[in-house]
Length: 415
Image (cartoon, rainbow, N blue to C red; front, top):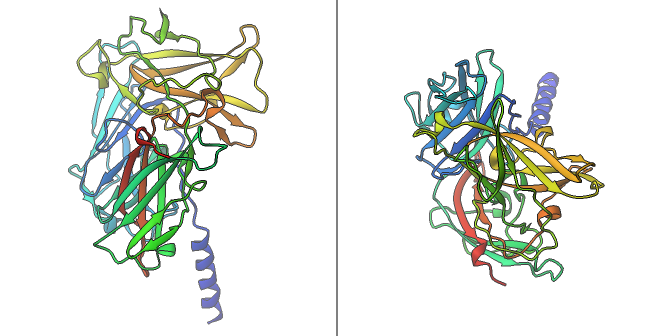
């Protein structure tokens, strides 16, 4: 009995400290990961139970390597759920991605891979919740992974975007208010059974979590916080379009052909002190496209795209990075802007597949925190897309299901 007691203690402690799963860092030879659901834009897809999921990526080694995929289910906090695979997946994963083609008539050779779910191996997802798809090689090493969410339409989520009630931030922050109601579920003890996830522009890295209902009216949950559900409003994203590899555009100043094409963007400047100007964007996303071929998946060129930001003195207390969905909002050495003291410019070069891209510059402080508005500024008029996901685990439940999704755009912001 003593040993059984010790074993129970060990198991409880292990479950209490279950590891939070993060997305794997993508190696340099894997490029242009496009992960979509019912949207044309890449990111961490949010699909309804029964909808289609699509994954595309390039291997610029171009040797037709074998890649496989696996799918795992997770709790709200991205710790592994208690469900076994047969409880959340109809079919068999762990199989080879067989749909691939080599690039055609491009300077940079690459192999393009595509995966669609459902397929002949995986029929459907059985339950809602958080998921991670991992792509691994023939040596069983994970090459990259991406998070996605599956929801059921069991609750309605009414979302409204407000200006901050704090006068210090009324012109620089946007606040997400929302109400949750369900006629299909009896929501008992919502402070423990209901959790929410609030996203701005599909960026899971800066999501707001762990928000409890402010108050309840019957079976309706009301969230009318100010500070707790506020986001910095930011500014419209900068953009460039390289669909025509040989012609400069409003963002591309000049083009050179070396081993590959090189596109040099016009030098950007700080917008933090400038008046807000509406410039339609796609909220940090990107779209692969080309005018040089009919199939953009395999006929698009890879281009070295050169960025420059004017700042006559080096910035103290942090580093400048390029930021956007082109690499799933990751911050690493490849996104770092290097300061050139002879020109007074921060510079960087990235290898991008032809297409339309949004990007912006951010400051990453020494403590690792991100200041989105240091270069771009924060303006309450900025157009941003917001999503609210509602998680529910009934008393005695074994996993966190997602019972509703709400959407709103800050174009309709009110006081």
